[in-house]
Image (tube, rainbow, N blue to C red; front, side, top):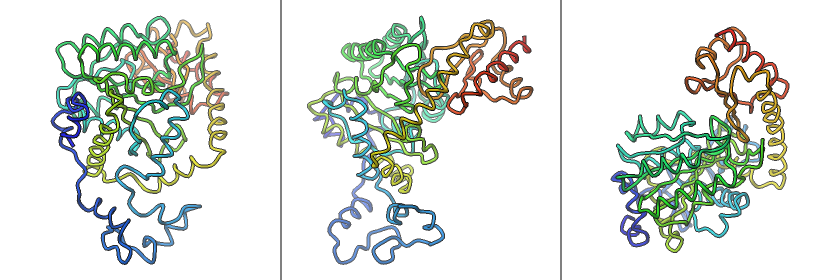
Length: 429
């Protein structure tokens, strides 16, 4: 695999650290079983499951909970890369929602156990201890667990906001500073963002991609990871935002720039507990992208096989079937409007002049969350007081910042929540 990658795109092989060069998909039980599934017309004695008749052995007490799903779609093992039909269906969805992807050479998505495993697979292939990972300072806390605590990488941050929007100049400056003296740099961007709920504008997105391309052209090998967990939940509060993933803008742009998209049914189809996500590769060199994707696909399958073996079959079948009906787009649009109404109400209330002495509102326009910067009190103390005295739960994400999930806040709850948050801050003062 490494030899194939070196021939197709030596700069892509150079992105793989010692750990990333080791995974492969073995020609063992799974590959031999796959061959037998196609050719064993008399008896197939390769399967690691028990069968009865033409299907998997199963208990009626378990099968009775399946509705419009056959036992064969729930109980057997799934392929390590995921159900072929689901992978193709998710690619069709990506292309429909990201028109810029339609002329790009990118991989077929590999199914993951939600985006969290996708982040871990990125570490399997591309992260060595001591590697530098650059991301904005408003970030999901689990990134630190995945990359610093478990993998020994070092996280560097850049200021997220400037002048009411994303700090593109600060990002470009931090990119150059952290690339200095390094052959490789990993960049992680999460939009719409958790915790702030911000999605860049078109101009900001173009500036971000231009900075990545410029740094790649300067000789830094970049792994650009786009965590699109909240993709599609765009409300355009305060002005229009991007509606495409930055992955679509970054793929095939420069040989030293490998783009990786992490997304999933988790939030996009409102099926959090199914833990069904995807990882898609966008090589920098379009001419050899197919060969690079083939190698990386095999390495991902090997990493999945050596880790959790495969993603639950039932989760994949539910998601695949959910994508099929012609009504799914209308169903998603209806839920989006519910979330939009909540976001708009929170935007209106949180920005009310009467609360200006208690907090500043960080820009938000998408996703599930918004944040305020508390004035004159510590966020953690405010959080605890709000919980103990007013019975309201919020998240303190830093010394001054409090995150509020409007995704689970009915429209009528916005006004009383912020009134009590205001009181709690005044109490603490």
